[in-house]
Length: 108
Length: 113
Image 1 (cartoon, rainbow over the protein chains, first blue to last red):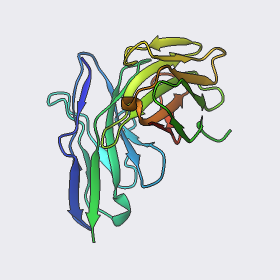
Image 2: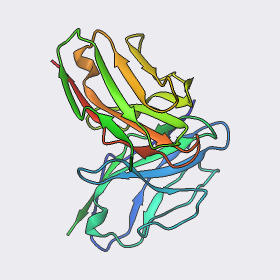
Image 3: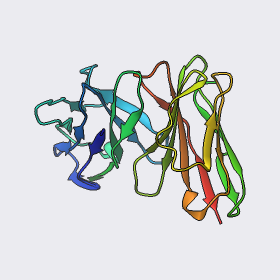
Image 4: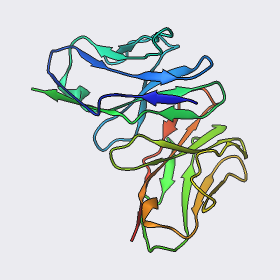
């Protein structure tokens, strides 16, 4: 069965410190992995996807098929990074499954 | 329109009543998703349309829930005999096809009293 696990409900990080939001998945095929973000009072939006290999707002995520992980990282946290982050998985032409989310709180 | 639009934004209904939630996707998007999000939880998959047909409805919790997309554009999520446990934010998203970026609406907050 497809599953996305985000082990941390809340992560508090000081401004300027590195950030790592963990995501593990289970899927028998070759899924596509995403990170979505929801800022306060805004709608859910795509942050990045693994096939793009982009850095968005300083965030990167590497797909590790051996560990079935897709952790989100940023070297230096900024206050505007405070938000809910959701890891998600999809197979081609299929539904998107979300994790339960991690609330990132950047401390001043 | 500029994005995915959901109406109403808030709906309060009495237990046992019937409700319809509407989603207007981005024009031209063939894939449409419905999710339910309870407080402190991630979006829970309900149903996924490709065009007019439901490609996957495995997330619908029971037969009180039904969704349609008759012309491959607007979709309506229908809930019969509402229960207090149905209270949640119902999210709609659309994408150009099944594996590109999904754009979300602002959600409909349903409260069953």
